[in-house]
Image (tube, rainbow, N blue to C red):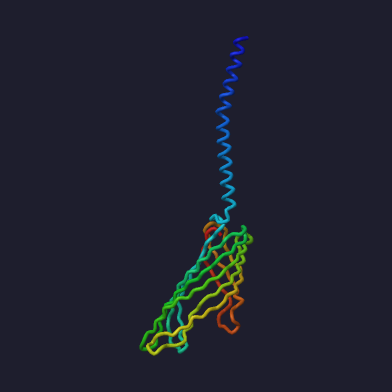
Amino acid sequence: SILYMKKLLLCLGIKTIIGLVSDPVMAQTSKKTTKSKSKSKKKEENPFRIEKFWFGGGFNLQFYQTSLSSSVPGNIFEFGLSPLAGYKFTNWFTMGPRLEFNYLGGRFDNNPDVIKLNAFTYGGGLFARARFLRMFFAHFEYGANSSIEVTGISANNRLETNRLWQDNLLLGLGYNPEATWSYEFYIMYDFLTPSDSPQVPVRYRAGITWNF
């Protein structure tokens, strides 16, 4: 009987010790799990986490022959960049800004002199995109772009220019394979192109994207 009581007391003692040790460990584990879930939830709720943004851009590179209004022939080199960034309101709808910068360098043969052109054009706007069927998207954009108009040649053989601004209202469709790094091209129609302008109202663009 005394031996039995000793064994019973020993078992109770061991259980008590295990309970005292395991309770803090379980509490600590539970606390860590709760903190981990809390951090994960806060990350998901953060509207400015990097997963909510995507970036992209294109470039323009042209070399072409042209002439001034006075029939002075010449050549123009044009290089430009057009970065854009979007915010994902949903998995399929995004909005953001787009910028555009272009450099124009030209030479015109006004015999016996050579007239040089060094000019910059720029612009920008806001766009909205809706992705559908995983690899296609609809693109809507409103903005304004500048252009350079040559108005004449000065007495010291320098080009006289004037900066023009034109509003754009673009709507079109594009193709972008779904991937972290991807490429895209799209075609749009400019509804604000003046009816008396020789400029074609159709716009083509191509570029690369990240996280779109």
